[in-house]
Length: 305
Image (cartoon, rainbow, N blue to C red; front, side, top):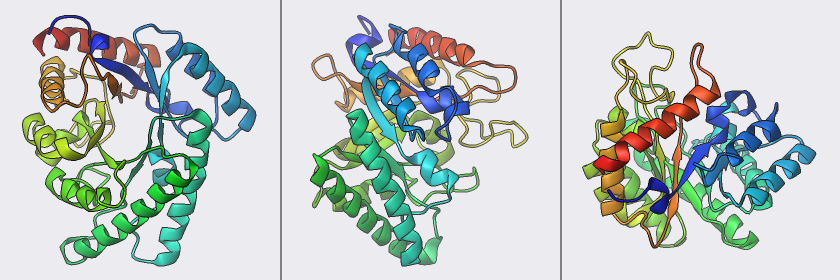
């Protein structure tokens, strides 16, 4: 592929994954965000809940001053509090919806390009149809809430099904696309987020996944996973750096994924959209190591796209 990756996409980094100490909304949010926004390799950042309003306002200003596109991830909030948008009990779904709506309000403070959630756990074969119905109802409510604030898109990220940890209802692409199309009929701005790191866990490949999801594709993450070594600290959906011996994705995998993303029309020179690294440090690795790995992998992959 000619040119640079940045000519075809807004290269992003997920703040709370590269710097996991801020994932719960506390810690050196401003300082770490400043590191990302000072790096000319990136044009986008993905953020989550920041508990302190003053720190949040300062961080928002950092991103604005840098001219960065911002996307907002509610996944850490839902996961950390074990909130489930497809919970069979109405009161429990209401808790998840309330938390998501509060975070939509926060996403609007950032002027975010989109707001991402994930489904709750897969309830199993006998209850899966009802689970999809409940999830679709919850997402419609979130879309309506966001529309009343100004129309920021709501995005559903697909994850793994068992046995890798998240075991989400919204996992396999074909099922997730069928559900998304039902929601889109009422909420046209809604769509799916796909993540390269989840494809091996789902037993899928970029050609199938991106072709199948093309009509509802709203956002992309790129990363790695470990699925053949249960004793590895990053086993399952835990986003180690690219190219590790125990992992599934490397520069060649990334090139294939980006090639299919371009073919699907997700991003282009005329419509540069966010593609964000979701990578996390393990062991002695530092955030700087993670960021270095991200850049080197994309630079190695790009000529092969």
